[in-house]
Amino acid sequence: MSFWRGHSASRDATAQVEAINRSQAVIEFGADGTIIIANKNFLDAMGYALADIQGRHPSMFVAPDVRDSADYRAFWAALARGEFQMGEFERAG
Image (tube, rainbow, N blue to C red; front, side, top):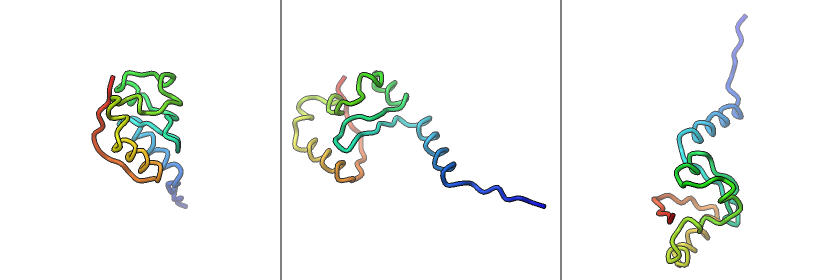
């Protein structure tokens, strides 16, 4: 008698998330743009602890002239609409 042990979608999704968190810097935002969570890779790369950034807006990572620009507001408006954004994003220390 043989048994097929199939992969569950849930187990596959969990494995993918774990792999991403091991290899990428990840940050999650709420609908209003506030920081919900960031993984260790992100925190280490940015030089923060989660308590330093959680609940704050990521505008804390950019220079004031960028934060106050129309392009930056448009960027966050697009994210709020669920539009994917990709690129290199400069941060201020």
